[in-house]
Length: 94
Image (cartoon, rainbow, N blue to C red):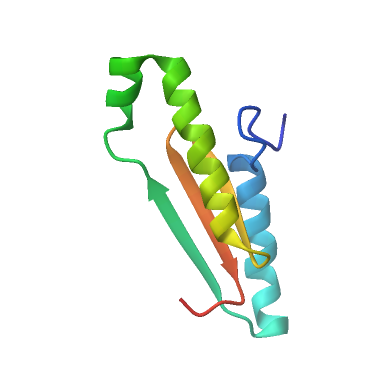
């Protein structure tokens, strides 16, 4: 739980920062590219307010599943807060 989000089993903010630090530290030695994408789901609070937190959790779990499926092997997806996700794309040109 200290490094992963309990609802989605994705890395949390703490683990995301560790992954980012590691990736940045290896850039000089490997010469690889690193891209960071920040995704904030606009107006997500409306889902929670209109349909309840259980429905919001279902939506977030589905988003996490789809983000993870899109990510591939050279990308990690982290949930850093309620409706905010970070993609770390290691070695990819975006």
